[in-house]
Length: 257
Image 1 (tube, rainbow, N blue to C red):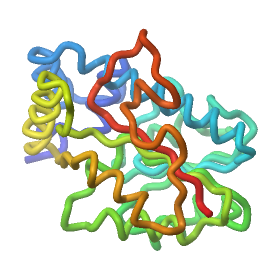
Image 2: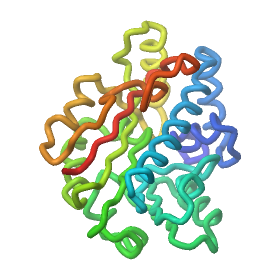
Image 3: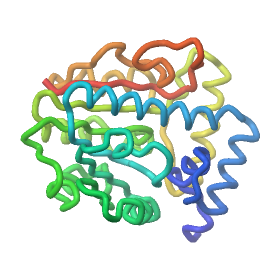
């Protein structure tokens, strides 16, 4: 099956956000999901809104460098737009996402786009677009927003995270959002299970993890301090808002200590 015949998570997400960097298979997969769960488009927007709030938080903590892993297709609200004047290294495995980012970033200083697999931290950290831009002797915010649920259980996500954390100095931050079928609301739980089933046939299968599994990614690493409010829905980070209902994606931010 060719690339044009198989949907891809980055391009589905782009379609959900109203972007133009998507193919027919991506639109078909997105419409299949939206036909059963129309509010899934709000999931995409809430996750993007979380990215904005988290980046603004990082800047407020004095962090001026970002490593955006699984950055996806360039669309609304990119990190370098949220935090102008900072250094931003975008990394994605999807060639369409990386080429789109390079086209968008042409002439933009202190911002790079690198094609690499986030599951291979040594390769990512050694890439010219990362090592040649970011100073790992100073704090860096590592963003894994809607990315870790594409890391298969066999890839040992805890080891992957630990490798990135080991490269960071104290004061650095780790930002994560992760879809999960472990939800109190049965409708949201069913939606998350449907997403997993639809994505199973795509180029980028998604894997659900429980709340406990996601929490352990932080709690089991003595080099990380999970910041308040700990693990919550993206719509409730950093504080609940009655205008934002839960969407089935958990969020957390941790500091390197």
